[in-house]
Amino acid sequence: MTESYSISDLAGEFGVTARAIRFYEEKGLISPSRNGQDRVYGRRDYVRLNLILRGKRLGFSLADIEEMMALYNRDGEHTEQARVTLDKSEARLEALKQQRRDIDETVDELEKICAEIKSHLKGKGVVNA
Amino acid sequence: MTESYSISDLAGEFGVTARAIRFYEEKGLISPSRNGQDRVYGRRDYVRLNLILRGKRLGFSLADIEEMMALYNRDGEHTEQARVTLDKSEARLEALKQQRRDIDETVDELEKICAEIKSHLKGKGVVNA
DNA sequence: CTTGACGTTTACGTTAACGTCAACCAAAAA
DNA sequence: TTTTTGGTTGACGTTAACGTAAACGTCAAG
Image (cartoon, rainbow over all chains, first blue to last red; front, side, top):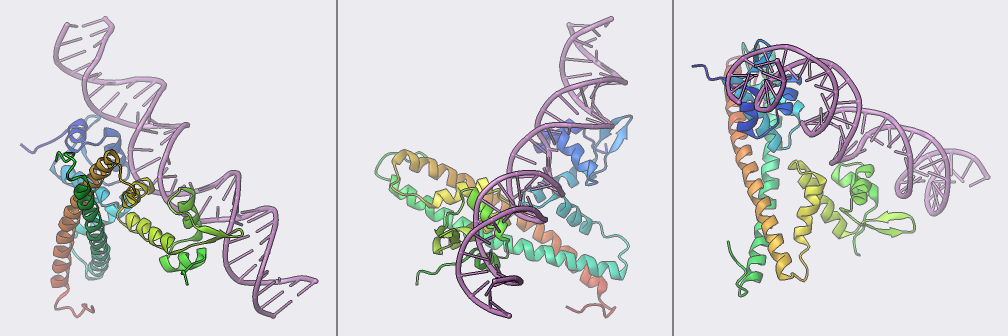
Protein backbone atom coordinates (compact mmCIF):
# COMPACT_ATOMS: atom_id res chain seq x y z
CA MET A 1 0.00 0.00 0.00
CA THR A 2 3.04 2.23 0.09
CA GLU A 3 2.15 3.89 -3.22
CA SER A 4 4.87 3.55 -5.80
CA TYR A 5 5.42 4.80 -9.33
CA SER A 6 7.44 3.84 -12.36
CA ILE A 7 9.47 6.48 -14.11
CA SER A 8 6.87 6.92 -16.82
CA ASP A 9 4.12 7.16 -14.23
CA LEU A 10 5.86 10.19 -12.81
CA ALA A 11 6.74 11.57 -16.21
CA GLY A 12 3.09 11.38 -17.16
CA GLU A 13 1.77 12.84 -13.92
CA PHE A 14 4.06 15.83 -14.01
CA GLY A 15 4.43 16.29 -17.73
CA VAL A 16 8.17 15.93 -17.87
CA THR A 17 10.37 13.43 -19.70
CA ALA A 18 11.90 10.36 -18.11
CA ARG A 19 15.25 11.77 -19.16
CA ALA A 20 14.67 14.82 -17.00
CA ILE A 21 13.75 12.69 -14.01
CA ARG A 22 16.89 10.60 -14.37
CA PHE A 23 18.83 13.81 -14.69
CA TYR A 24 17.47 15.10 -11.40
CA GLU A 25 18.54 11.86 -9.80
CA GLU A 26 21.99 12.16 -11.32
CA LYS A 27 22.15 15.58 -9.68
CA GLY A 28 21.22 14.05 -6.37
CA LEU A 29 17.80 15.70 -6.10
CA ILE A 30 15.89 12.45 -5.83
CA SER A 31 16.96 8.92 -5.00
CA PRO A 32 14.41 6.29 -5.92
CA SER A 33 14.85 2.70 -4.84
CA ARG A 34 15.30 -0.13 -7.30
CA ASN A 35 13.45 -3.23 -8.26
CA GLY A 36 16.28 -5.10 -9.88
CA GLN A 37 17.50 -2.56 -12.38
CA ASP A 38 14.31 -0.52 -12.62
CA ARG A 39 13.72 2.62 -10.62
CA VAL A 40 10.84 2.64 -8.16
CA TYR A 41 9.57 5.97 -6.91
CA GLY A 42 7.78 6.33 -3.60
CA ARG A 43 5.81 9.05 -1.86
CA ARG A 44 8.95 10.87 -0.86
CA ASP A 45 10.24 10.98 -4.41
CA TYR A 46 6.88 12.16 -5.62
CA VAL A 47 6.90 15.06 -3.20
CA ARG A 48 10.46 15.97 -4.02
CA LEU A 49 9.79 15.99 -7.73
CA ASN A 50 6.88 18.27 -7.07
CA LEU A 51 9.16 20.65 -5.20
CA ILE A 52 11.70 20.54 -7.98
CA LEU A 53 9.16 21.50 -10.60
CA ARG A 54 7.72 24.26 -8.48
CA GLY A 55 11.23 25.61 -8.09
CA LYS A 56 11.70 25.47 -11.81
CA ARG A 57 8.52 27.39 -12.44
CA LEU A 58 9.95 30.05 -10.19
CA GLY A 59 13.08 30.18 -12.29
CA PHE A 60 15.45 28.62 -9.79
CA SER A 61 18.41 26.54 -10.87
CA LEU A 62 18.64 22.93 -9.80
CA ALA A 63 21.46 23.90 -7.46
CA ASP A 64 19.20 26.49 -5.83
CA ILE A 65 16.43 23.95 -5.56
CA GLU A 66 18.74 21.43 -3.96
CA GLU A 67 19.71 23.99 -1.35
CA MET A 68 16.12 24.89 -0.66
CA MET A 69 15.07 21.28 -0.28
CA ALA A 70 17.92 20.79 2.15
CA LEU A 71 16.28 23.43 4.33
CA TYR A 72 13.31 21.11 4.76
CA ASN A 73 15.49 18.27 5.95
CA ARG A 74 16.53 19.73 9.24
CA ASP A 75 17.36 16.81 11.47
CA GLY A 76 19.13 16.89 14.78
CA GLU A 77 19.65 20.65 14.54
CA HIS A 78 23.04 21.38 15.89
CA THR A 79 22.92 25.00 16.99
CA GLU A 80 25.52 26.28 14.59
CA GLN A 81 23.99 24.50 11.62
CA ALA A 82 20.59 25.79 12.61
CA ARG A 83 21.83 29.36 12.32
CA VAL A 84 23.18 28.70 8.85
CA THR A 85 19.88 27.20 7.82
CA LEU A 86 18.04 30.17 9.25
CA ASP A 87 20.21 32.64 7.36
CA LYS A 88 19.76 30.80 4.10
CA SER A 89 16.03 30.57 4.61
CA GLU A 90 15.74 34.25 5.26
CA ALA A 91 17.81 35.07 2.20
CA ARG A 92 15.50 32.90 0.11
CA LEU A 93 12.51 34.60 1.60
CA GLU A 94 13.84 37.98 0.64
CA ALA A 95 14.38 36.88 -2.95
CA LEU A 96 10.91 35.38 -3.10
CA LYS A 97 9.32 38.55 -1.82
CA GLN A 98 11.19 40.58 -4.40
CA GLN A 99 9.86 38.18 -6.99
CA ARG A 100 6.36 38.70 -5.75
CA ARG A 101 6.73 42.44 -6.09
CA ASP A 102 8.01 41.97 -9.62
CA ILE A 103 5.07 39.78 -10.43
CA ASP A 104 2.58 42.22 -8.98
CA GLU A 105 3.98 45.03 -11.09
CA THR A 106 3.99 42.96 -14.24
CA VAL A 107 0.50 41.66 -13.65
CA ASP A 108 -0.78 45.19 -13.18
CA GLU A 109 0.80 46.35 -16.40
CA LEU A 110 -0.45 43.41 -18.40
CA GLU A 111 -3.94 43.82 -17.04
CA LYS A 112 -3.95 47.43 -18.14
CA ILE A 113 -2.88 46.36 -21.59
CA CYS A 114 -5.62 43.76 -21.72
CA ALA A 115 -8.20 46.28 -20.63
CA GLU A 116 -7.11 48.78 -23.25
CA ILE A 117 -7.17 46.25 -26.00
CA LYS A 118 -10.57 45.02 -24.96
CA SER A 119 -12.04 48.49 -25.02
CA HIS A 120 -10.41 48.98 -28.40
CA LEU A 121 -12.01 45.81 -29.68
CA LYS A 122 -15.38 46.87 -28.33
CA GLY A 123 -18.00 47.92 -30.81
CA LYS A 124 -16.51 45.53 -33.32
CA GLY A 125 -18.13 42.28 -32.35
CA VAL A 126 -14.68 40.78 -32.05
CA VAL A 127 -14.83 39.95 -28.39
CA ASN A 128 -15.50 36.28 -27.94
CA ALA A 129 -14.11 35.47 -24.51
CA MET B 1 18.47 67.61 -20.73
CA THR B 2 17.33 64.44 -22.38
CA GLU B 3 19.07 62.27 -19.80
CA SER B 4 21.59 59.91 -21.31
CA TYR B 5 23.87 57.21 -20.02
CA SER B 6 27.07 55.51 -21.05
CA ILE B 7 27.23 51.75 -21.02
CA SER B 8 29.07 51.69 -17.72
CA ASP B 9 26.60 54.12 -16.21
CA LEU B 10 23.87 51.62 -16.88
CA ALA B 11 25.99 48.69 -15.85
CA GLY B 12 26.63 50.42 -12.53
CA GLU B 13 23.04 51.46 -11.94
CA PHE B 14 21.65 48.02 -12.57
CA GLY B 15 24.51 45.90 -11.36
CA VAL B 16 25.09 44.06 -14.61
CA THR B 17 28.12 43.89 -16.87
CA ALA B 18 28.58 45.93 -20.02
CA ARG B 19 28.92 42.64 -21.84
CA ALA B 20 25.42 41.67 -20.81
CA ILE B 21 24.02 44.99 -22.00
CA ARG B 22 25.67 44.61 -25.39
CA PHE B 23 24.32 41.12 -25.52
CA TYR B 24 20.78 42.34 -25.00
CA GLU B 25 21.29 44.77 -27.83
CA GLU B 26 22.64 42.02 -30.06
CA LYS B 27 19.42 40.16 -29.31
CA GLY B 28 17.40 43.20 -30.32
CA LEU B 29 16.06 43.98 -26.87
CA ILE B 30 17.49 47.50 -26.74
CA SER B 31 18.79 49.80 -29.43
CA PRO B 32 20.82 52.72 -28.10
CA SER B 33 21.91 55.51 -30.38
CA ARG B 34 25.55 56.25 -31.09
CA ASN B 35 27.92 59.09 -30.53
CA GLY B 36 30.50 58.17 -33.11
CA GLN B 37 31.28 54.64 -32.17
CA ASP B 38 30.15 54.80 -28.55
CA ARG B 39 26.73 53.71 -27.43
CA VAL B 40 24.47 56.32 -25.87
CA TYR B 41 21.50 55.14 -23.83
CA GLY B 42 18.41 57.29 -23.34
CA ARG B 43 15.35 57.13 -21.14
CA ARG B 44 13.72 54.53 -23.33
CA ASP B 45 16.73 52.23 -23.14
CA TYR B 46 16.85 52.70 -19.40
CA VAL B 47 13.25 51.64 -19.03
CA ARG B 48 13.68 48.67 -21.33
CA LEU B 49 16.72 47.45 -19.46
CA ASN B 50 14.72 47.67 -16.30
CA LEU B 51 12.01 45.53 -17.83
CA ILE B 52 14.57 43.03 -19.04
CA LEU B 53 16.04 42.62 -15.59
CA ARG B 54 12.68 42.31 -13.96
CA GLY B 55 11.85 39.60 -16.44
CA LYS B 56 15.05 37.84 -15.61
CA ARG B 57 14.34 37.93 -11.90
CA LEU B 58 11.09 36.21 -12.74
CA GLY B 59 12.98 33.48 -14.55
CA PHE B 60 11.90 34.39 -18.07
CA SER B 61 14.13 33.80 -21.06
CA LEU B 62 15.23 36.73 -23.17
CA ALA B 63 12.94 35.49 -25.92
CA ASP B 64 10.00 35.58 -23.50
CA ILE B 65 10.99 39.02 -22.37
CA GLU B 66 11.19 40.25 -25.92
CA GLU B 67 7.68 39.00 -26.56
CA MET B 68 6.37 40.61 -23.40
CA MET B 69 7.96 43.93 -24.21
CA ALA B 70 6.39 43.80 -27.63
CA LEU B 71 3.02 43.75 -25.89
CA TYR B 72 3.74 47.22 -24.55
CA ASN B 73 4.48 48.60 -27.99
CA ARG B 74 1.00 48.42 -29.39
CA ASP B 75 0.80 51.04 -32.08
CA GLY B 76 -1.86 51.42 -34.73
CA GLU B 77 -3.67 48.33 -33.44
CA HIS B 78 -5.01 46.53 -36.41
CA THR B 79 -7.94 44.52 -35.14
CA GLU B 80 -6.51 41.14 -35.92
CA GLN B 81 -3.15 41.93 -34.37
CA ALA B 82 -4.89 43.31 -31.31
CA ARG B 83 -6.55 39.95 -30.73
CA VAL B 84 -3.23 38.18 -30.93
CA THR B 85 -1.74 40.60 -28.45
CA LEU B 86 -4.67 40.11 -26.14
CA ASP B 87 -4.33 36.35 -26.25
CA LYS B 88 -0.65 36.48 -25.54
CA SER B 89 -1.16 38.91 -22.69
CA GLU B 90 -3.74 36.71 -21.10
CA ALA B 91 -1.52 33.67 -21.43
CA ARG B 92 1.29 35.55 -19.71
CA LEU B 93 -1.08 36.63 -16.99
CA GLU B 94 -2.06 33.06 -16.33
CA ALA B 95 1.57 31.98 -16.03
CA LEU B 96 2.32 34.88 -13.72
CA LYS B 97 -0.58 34.04 -11.46
CA GLN B 98 0.55 30.43 -11.27
CA GLN B 99 3.96 31.72 -10.35
CA ARG B 100 2.46 33.84 -7.62
CA ARG B 101 0.71 30.83 -6.18
CA ASP B 102 3.99 28.93 -6.24
CA ILE B 103 5.69 31.77 -4.44
CA ASP B 104 3.00 32.01 -1.80
CA GLU B 105 3.31 28.31 -1.03
CA THR B 106 7.07 28.45 -0.85
CA VAL B 107 7.06 31.54 1.30
CA ASP B 108 4.66 29.92 3.72
CA GLU B 109 6.82 26.85 4.02
CA LEU B 110 10.01 28.79 4.48
CA GLU B 111 8.44 31.00 7.10
CA LYS B 112 7.38 27.96 9.05
CA ILE B 113 10.91 26.66 8.91
CA CYS B 114 12.30 29.97 10.09
CA ALA B 115 9.84 30.07 12.95
CA GLU B 116 10.72 26.56 14.05
CA ILE B 117 14.41 27.23 13.93
CA LYS B 118 14.00 30.44 15.87
CA SER B 119 12.08 28.74 18.61
CA HIS B 120 14.72 26.04 18.65
CA LEU B 121 17.44 28.65 19.04
CA LYS B 122 15.53 30.34 21.83
CA GLY B 123 16.87 29.95 25.33
CA LYS B 124 20.35 29.77 23.92
CA GLY B 125 21.20 33.44 23.49
CA VAL B 126 22.04 32.75 19.87
CA VAL B 127 19.41 34.97 18.34
CA ASN B 128 20.99 38.18 17.17
CA ALA B 129 18.62 39.46 14.52
C1' DC C 1 9.91 -17.05 -30.87
C1' DT C 2 9.99 -12.54 -32.03
C1' DT C 3 8.04 -8.28 -31.57
C1' DG C 4 6.84 -4.42 -28.91
C1' DA C 5 6.53 -1.68 -24.82
C1' DC C 6 9.22 -0.13 -21.20
C1' DG C 7 13.34 0.18 -18.81
C1' DT C 8 18.60 0.76 -18.36
C1' DT C 9 23.48 3.01 -19.07
C1' DT C 10 26.82 5.68 -21.67
C1' DA C 11 27.93 9.34 -24.27
C1' DC C 12 27.81 12.97 -27.36
C1' DG C 13 24.86 17.15 -29.09
C1' DT C 14 22.40 21.51 -28.20
C1' DT C 15 20.72 26.07 -26.63
C1' DA C 16 20.83 30.10 -23.75
C1' DA C 17 23.22 33.66 -21.66
C1' DC C 18 26.70 35.45 -20.94
C1' DG C 19 32.36 35.42 -19.53
C1' DT C 20 36.76 36.14 -21.19
C1' DC C 21 40.23 37.30 -23.97
C1' DA C 22 42.56 39.84 -27.98
C1' DA C 23 43.32 43.71 -30.71
C1' DC C 24 41.92 47.99 -31.59
C1' DC C 25 40.58 53.35 -31.24
C1' DA C 26 40.13 57.94 -28.87
C1' DA C 27 40.09 61.35 -25.52
C1' DA C 28 41.90 62.89 -21.08
C1' DA C 29 45.35 62.98 -17.70
C1' DA C 30 50.07 62.75 -16.19
C1' DT D 1 54.04 62.41 -25.56
C1' DT D 2 53.21 58.35 -23.25
C1' DT D 3 49.87 56.26 -20.37
C1' DT D 4 45.42 55.61 -18.50
C1' DT D 5 40.65 55.14 -18.85
C1' DG D 6 36.70 53.72 -21.24
C1' DG D 7 34.77 52.27 -25.24
C1' DT D 8 34.48 49.05 -29.57
C1' DT D 9 34.16 44.55 -32.35
C1' DG D 10 35.07 39.79 -33.06
C1' DA D 11 35.63 35.20 -31.58
C1' DC D 12 36.10 31.42 -28.69
C1' DG D 13 35.02 29.30 -23.87
C1' DT D 14 31.71 27.86 -20.34
C1' DT D 15 27.77 26.20 -17.57
C1' DA D 16 23.18 24.44 -17.02
C1' DA D 17 19.66 21.48 -18.25
C1' DC D 18 18.35 18.57 -20.64
C1' DG D 19 17.67 16.08 -25.87
C1' DT D 20 18.94 12.44 -28.63
C1' DA D 21 20.81 8.29 -30.16
C1' DA D 22 23.10 3.76 -29.57
C1' DA D 23 23.10 -0.64 -27.61
C1' DC D 24 21.34 -3.55 -24.49
C1' DG D 25 17.96 -6.31 -20.85
C1' DT D 26 12.98 -8.15 -19.87
C1' DC D 27 8.68 -9.59 -19.87
C1' DA D 28 3.99 -10.27 -21.80
C1' DA D 29 1.31 -10.75 -26.06
C1' DG D 30 0.66 -12.46 -30.57
